Image 1 (cartoon, protein in one colour):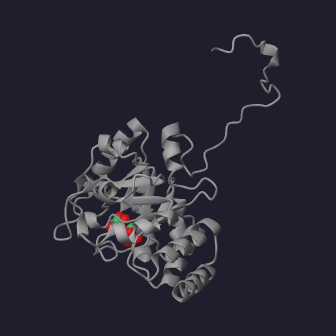
Image 2 (cartoon, rainbow, N blue to C red):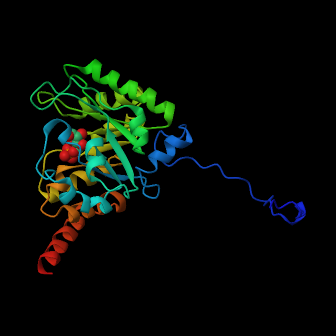
Length: 296
Ligand code: R5P
């Protein structure tokens, strides 16, 4: 029954408190719509402003990558240590428990395998399926300087347009061709193009020289890919340096799931990314926890 008989005077309208209007915590994202911000907050932790994305989408062009042969066995136990999972809809539907409630970033471009020209990608998902799977964002590969540069940029801008219609962020993944120089100049170019053309955030590679100029000149958040497997301490150093120089997270795959102890490596990466812990301390945690696990 409606509460009609209480006099207005007994209600408390907190007339002395002004309604607050807070800026959104994420770089370059304040003017986005509510749904877009809400989805980004399922990817980036609002307290630290950072994210540890676990990237397991490698199979979309290279098949059963080392460490990803059995996602059900090797990756599902890592889920509690990731803020976000980046993967294909095939693996999501077949293997990931629907009780997983953190952010999902769906690989939405594809086509060529490692046997062909990789830049020849097309959009590989319908927006309806992205929404059906309750994703937090779509990821699209962008090949600046690649043979099919324009096509890949158009894939991105089409996804940005569709995503904007439904409040779905688009992650632009900058792919660097084998024969291209991986330096700050290239990363600045690639990241800035993606941001200018509407990407909500950009994934790129860390470079030792001048990485801060890449993050400074990109008006939206940057996360770094891990790249090829490195010794654990080196991978933690890379993550630390990237965050220290303005990256807002990592989208790390092989350096976590190919580590000797993937769950501990994921936790060590979290310490660096979310707590700003020095790589040497995070590595100490990794090593000593590994010994404890071995002894137990
Ligand atoms: C390419 O296969 C994907 O975009 C990966 O998600 C990306 O390279 C990150 O994975 P990794 O840290 O293994 O480089």
